[in-house]
Length: 431
Ligand SMILES: *Cc1c(COP(=O)(O)O)cnc(C)c1O
Image 1 (cartoon, rainbow, N blue to C red):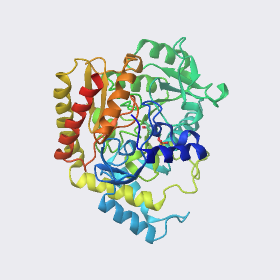
Image 2 (image 1 turned 180 degrees about the vertical axis):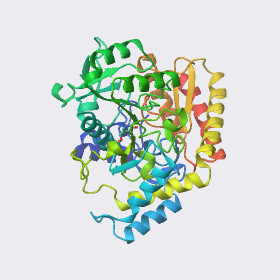
Image 3 (image 1 turned 180 degrees about the horizontal axis):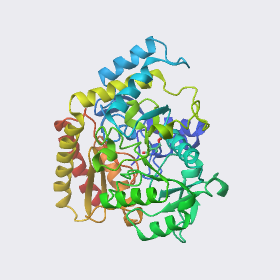
């Protein structure tokens, strides 16, 4: 489990100047043990560490890199943007091009406001919902992640449905007093909660495909019911598609399910790996934002031209090569190979896959739809599996609860090799 001394030495230095040695918690190896690997370069499906060792990268920066690392067309767009000056703080044609590309393809995104992260996209959507409804409360679901803003960094408490507890220190009760939490894949408590609070509910916020606490596919009928209950009490439906937007097809989960949100949050793929997020939705709702309306929202570097130009090239390329379908075909074959290899080893090892997102987990064969159905023992198994894979040159997200991503740079040969290595890693993890 010990990383080469070079990595350990770098990590020791990093820990001295940065909390935990990382700038985002999941980059640390807290969940899997050992010392994080320092990577120097990325190329297509591969990450290359500071010692020149190559790993098949199935994390892809947690999702944004749908074309893989350092795609040449995306790199050209980035270079061109740098040559032209990288921020103006003015109106410019690049965000206009991306906004038009998106709004012509995603009918429920009539207007769009660009921000710099998924967290900001959710903050903006909540502000719009509260401004538009004049109501204070929001409802979210346990196991859904919506970024690190105070009001959404909560989970259901151990008590009654609807009781909430912060999932972070530094979040005062006053910050989430208006946040209600319900369970995924459950209707009765949800109905009771909405009955009791619906008159003051501004929005129901959901990851339509929860992908931040394992991959927890929801029943389409349940999602439709959530939408119906939200509408019935006059709350807005917000889909947080920061992971799924432009990953699960151009329309994300809304496109796949036919359920139309009032507001939708984007991030990750939309910027092709640069810091871009967006809040989009009905024109009458978005027009509550300043300067049209009274709901203030701003950003010095919002709609940064580098991110706008790389984001547009990324989306154009995926669309032009029928990329979403190709990704689905490849990832299906990859998951099937893994399942076949795992089946001969142990009956409780599964691959849940949706589009080009996958999650390798122990537990039930039926899709796990709620965090409390993940067996507690999964974490220990995953830590062994992760390091066995890492030794074989496969980089998985370093957490039992983070999902993996396939990019268009992962061709069938690379995925075949990854499957072989992961099968061997699974064998080692059980011994
Ligand atoms: C990643 C993610 C966020 C937060 O986005 P950041 O860019 O990390 O702030 C919010 N919601 C969902 C569903 C996400 O996957």
